[in-house]
Length: 410
Image (cartoon, rainbow, N blue to C red; front, side):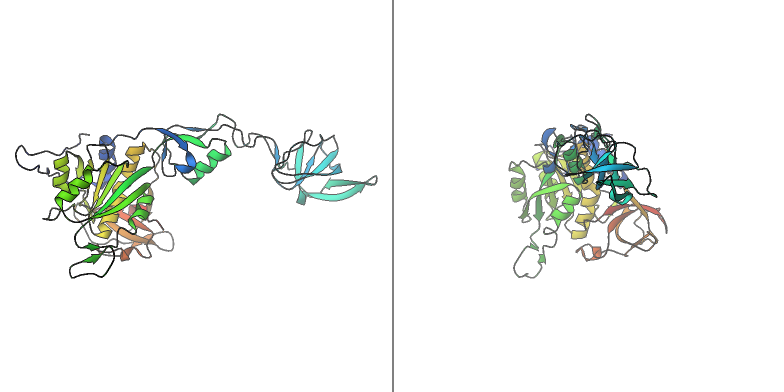
């Protein structure tokens, strides 16, 4: 797919080219065709949550490494149903000890290596204590099944087995499996880091509000929504509506892979993002998405290779745009291939947006269906309270229709 580029006027100040908005369904392909994947690096997987595996994760050790007891009970040698009982106990984390002769048993704890000569582990509840010729013994209970509770070496995986394929997100389960397989390090791309810029003369972070000012209710929570998209916020900056300041901010060298700008994506007198992107020679990936709210968004590649995501200034519109487009940028930067998509049926729908996709907060109802909350107000996030996801409601979706769900970060 050809990617549109910004055009610069031959004389005077650079002018941002106008592009038609793209559909929500096209975002992934458009971004993937325009954004190059990050370099591969080796790292401790525990430090790379939210990154993507650049190579398959291969087990360096079998699991278990030796035969072990899966339950508290007795390691036995021979078919039984009775065994003479030795006095020692086998504990997890300890090796050594005498071999088991046929017809003999030893007490064993869960996770303990079985002694050489053991043919099975019989769990506690399947055993009856007894005495034979004046010695301690155990008997298999009359109604007990013939079950072996030994966890055999390599039962879960062998050394060299592929545990996780390339392109998979590094999550807590991947980190834990890697530790179990003695493979704590891996080749990854990411996690993606972003510098966040909030713009607007009217935005006030702290202190009393003057006439015409509004409280900054987005930047305190934006990092949480970024984490949902696997984007780590490096720092949140605040900047007045000033073209020169904005251009200077972009000129500062940083080590992040992304820039997220909230505000300045409109076409008003105080919205300077498009002219500045044209001035610095940024390559526009797309400018506008056919969605409401959040359609006034921009994705561009800066001259130094960082990817810019420009979000609308209104809090709900910004969150909607981020959750729709942020994951596609992360997928492209980290070469992720296994992102899950969630779907649900809505029992109603709210209004019509022509050809645009509506982004609506939804809550789950009894029976697993989802209900929208009605018209959404963009200047705040209060409409998200009590909701579990955002629903992408296309123009042709009616009552009971199947829609994609974007889970909220709580």
